[in-house]
Amino acid sequence: METPLAVAPASLSRPLVDSYARRVDYIRISVTDRCDFRCVYCMSENMNFLPKQDLLTLEELERLSAAFVVRGVRKIRLTGGEPLVRRNVMQLFHGLSRLFDKGLEELTLTTNGSQLVRYAAELAACGVRRVNVSLDTLKPEKFRAITRWGDLGQVLAGIDAAQQAGLKVKINCVALKGENEDEFLPLVEWAHGRGADVSFIEAMPLGEDAVHNIESFLPLDAVTAALSQRLTLTPSTHVSGGPARYFDVAETGGRVGLITPLSQHFCDSCNRVRVTCTGTLYTCLGQEDKTDLRAPLRAARDDEALHAALDDAMRRKPRGHDFVAQWAGALAPAKRPMSMTGG
Image 1 (cartoon, one colour):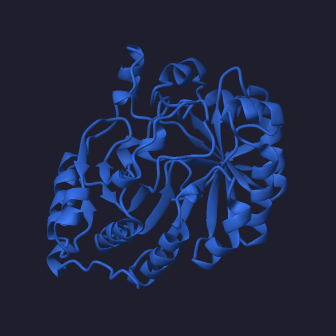
Image 2 (cartoon, helix red, strand yellow):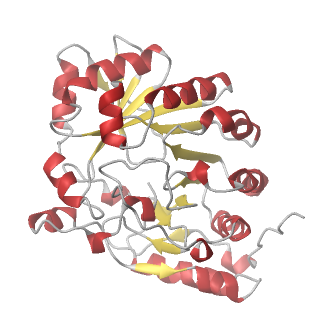
């Protein structure tokens, strides 16, 4: 039986705009904190995952997504943990595909690629047009060291399956000092050779392993410097709706994106919020202010209380994060891991 989509009164269909006049039209929703990898910059090897009963149900995730779309959200990215390890997760993708008729323009996900062989074709059938695959190295032994549990061959097979299903693939690479500095150029050439763009991301001080991220932090100026030795990078007019700044690469015809939350933050143009798998809304990745959406979501079917909670969260959305200040004291926001917040 299909879950009815929430419909807000006309008075509640106004856009989500914060106190700095930034319109929120992009949400990242974590569907699980669980993952089949244990990447060193994301979670501890011996994670204590949330009890399954604490998670929003798939039906609640669909209803919450519908409420955001009513308020003008046009892009939904499902994250984790690893979203595709959530049991029956394709039920959610099928449900969210109905939101394309309600104003949703893009449904996508960030994945480690381990489950794409199994799900790529069905994702495409649900209207997913592109996926972001986390891949920090093309060396099997180093891949195993960074992910702790991952199999590079399985991920590469997943990327093949995604492209065969017609999905556009973007590679996400976390730049790690002393770990993958020698691979930026080979990764770009490999990805562009198969029609995939690459975005490099600075390590952020989140979670129990924040000290590792602090020690491994590499400003992305080092990435562009390494690439520019062999490639011609020109600022691109391409925008993806996210925080990346793109460069066109003359020699390959592809693009390179830079996501720089620390060295060159992009807070002034932030159009995103994150919802955890338990229904907690964070309006800023680097701040601890949060809003409980699970309680109003479960309180009534008309969603009026839910929309009131969204309005209150928008009023409190901060101007920017405090990552630099937190780094000075080697602190991470309440030791909240990225897998809990959503990538």
